[in-house]
Length: 92
Ligand code: FES
Image 1 (tube, protein in one colour):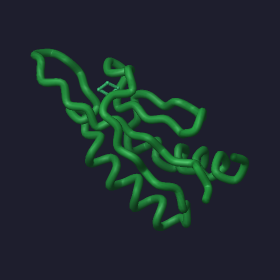
Image 2 (image 1 turned 180 degrees about the vertical axis):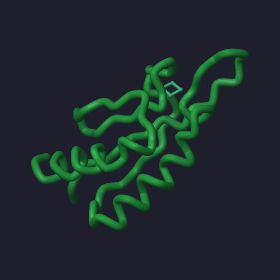
Image 3 (image 1 turned 60 degrees about the vertical axis):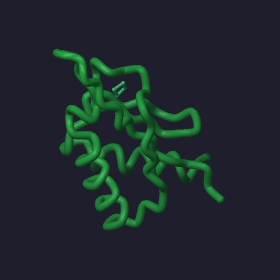
Image 4 (image 1 turned 90 degrees about the horizontal axis):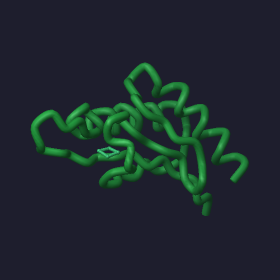
């Protein structure tokens, strides 16, 4: 089985003024990413993780194992990330 996956932070930090990925909409973005993967035939799981250590730069995600890191991700980046995931999964 192909080990490639996309790990997305779903951490919610509740302190005043503390930026977090869930607070920036990462759960909603996961739905958009999963739909994009399904519609474009990218057979790679999207895995939720609590914090990737880049909270101030969220929404944060990375390709695993050992792949590219993405920060400040918005819906506009989903196509680009999908292609990166596809390429990674073909070469892992
Ligand atoms: S809250 Fe997402 S990286 Fe920490």
